[in-house]
Length: 290
Length: 261
Image 1 (cartoon, rainbow over the protein chains, first blue to last red):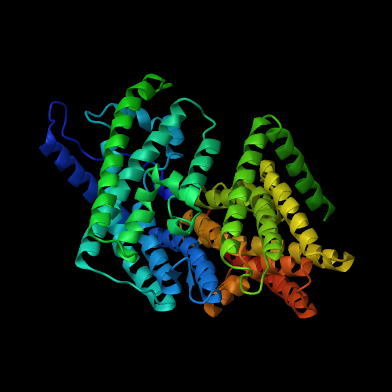
Image 2 (cartoon, rainbow over the protein chains, first blue to last red; image 1 turned 60 degrees about the vertical axis):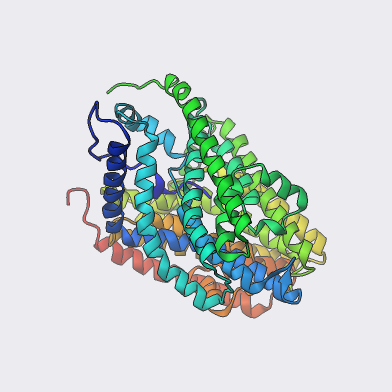
């Protein structure tokens, strides 16, 4: 749950279009170049990426073991979820969690203290673009490294899937939707650093709420009804529960479309709030020295 | 021996004096510890809302396991992890020179010089959970408490050894900072008794990462589920790990090339 060293600010080294070159084509160019750099960079750190991923796999394996134990003790299912369903849920969880790793809110402190932030401000585009592009490129590496882990987990725990083309297609879109929603939400949270230096307590509180209300801890259908109603009003299910359910659950066409629509809504809200907060945050920033 | 203990005492005093300058941090840490413990309790409530017992463990017994996990986690964060993080950094940057040139055993020095006293908040919260759980289970006599203290101490030694063994690999491979994440992730598995895990995982959590001896065994001592064999095994494994990590440390040191290389 805590900040990972791998998700700290990479030092931006990517060439950009130069002043005056704006517009969608140059932005696309920037995204592709940054993503390619990230892929090349992160492939060099295969071993480190793997060690990190294995440490992370422990969390869902623990949930999986606990809930399949409960399911077996209670005659095969808990609240309609069978042992095989739990296994499928937590295996898909591992990919969704990896897609969810974005620039950490703890990274802002370092960006500001070390002066990287001043460099970001000098660019002729919103700094959000760099983070989105860099981490998106990294995801390509992560997905490739994830495949053997998923195969091993499936061999060890026997999941049950009921796959359709619609679900598989929705899943491919939904994991990137989750990536965008969580990027924006954590960016907003990270900007808190401009107003206070004691950020770790609010951050921890945020991550605790996310753990409980997103479907990260347990499929949301097992939470008490009141918790589910609160969760429905937050972006959290869009980042964990929904993308996992598209592949591991039994959602039908309208449910898939609705979930993707909710993700889109949160992307728009998040982007709007970033646009609103960003100028105020920058105004509070004072660079020291050179 | 007396000098070694004396330096450790001095490190402790300096750490306390240093941290007392930032007293608000203690309250923030306490809030975070309480939030974390509250979350863990909510998870327990959720699980036991669906089932009366988990692999033979009752809710109150699992409260003891959770308490030991939080308590030991606090000890690790206070005294073990900060030292190992600094050791890793020193190996990478070559600043370990400053520790090696001191007229004191280097392993002792690098294992005692850093303390983050605020994480003792976790020790306090964990102790409360252990006491509440043990009282609700009932029946723990003085012998059980003594066995609990003994096995907890052995468990702490084993976790320290595992950490040091992992950190010492930094002498061979450079980018080992992710190992901290790896270890943190693995430690989370100790929140539940290792008996619930399937065979191959149970072996991993017993010998590779000694979570079984560090968390489950002390909890079993307090809930009167512990046989004398497990205590002897814990003592033997702790002794073995101390010797092995000492050897690994000495071999690793020979691979250390210093600041100028």
